[in-house]
Image 1 (tube, rainbow, N blue to C red):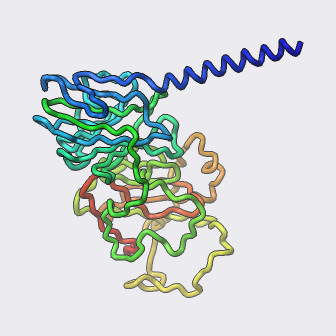
Image 2 (cartoon, one colour):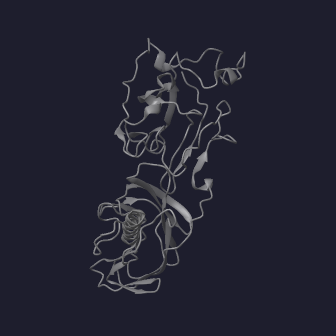
Image 3 (cartoon, one colour):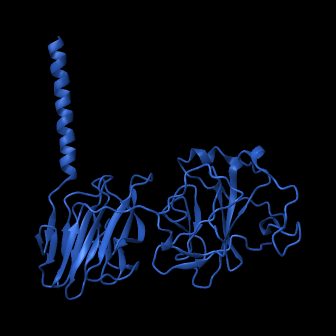
Length: 375
């Protein structure tokens, strides 16, 4: 009887082992390329400039290998070199980024192609000697989405949230003119140190990003995600006029904003709002009003004329904390050039809600005022 049990356990172990080996082999597939000559880590275009050449790496990016780089050795006739990520069975006669579920940064025009043959302005053009990098941020998020970022010569250019198939996203390089040649480093390392210089903010304050009356008791918001993309955040986006509320998909909200527009954001607290650790908060018995205002002279315009309207409660499946924390909800409102654009009810996370700005393309610059006069 013991021999039978031992044999049974061995057969089970063998089946599991074969299954595990099969899964590992399924992750690593044979590298594929078309209209290219591969010599070690050097790729050269071998087409007639009328057809695309494409290379797909043998394994997807993963936790242990989340970044790769491509050095441009020669731009050839047109410099139509693309670097990005594609699904496993990507068609090799298309540039990375042209087909659905692929994304790529194109060197010739500096555009980002995200599952579409029409690109969007993204970053600077790249020339001979430049290094284009591509990686993924492995952060807690929805399993079907990931943040893909691109770099030029070691500096991050921008990022985008994209869907991910079960097989993952594979490093890919595309070329489209005679003489193009690159060097591929699939084992490149990306330095993750924070670089605040990539966002140009003039706030006229020494430490504009820190509020002195809020105590941090929760993890910081991911610095590689736009405000509004991650749960617990909400934001009005200037480029499309949409509002993003804890999701990478936005809703129509207001007009687009351009250079010179003033975007505002505030919070309307309900009268029965309960603070965290209310007894521990030090209150100034005689607070000074902001400069240029009389004591008690400020009013919340959203509470004027009765102002007790309540926003329709937004239902978010799976967010048990928000549903069970009705006393910790506030109304966030957004303005454009001093006019109210709309409101959205949000739950306040531990630590509070912080003023936040996100940018995603080169040359963007804003001026920040954390203490504007209101009312």
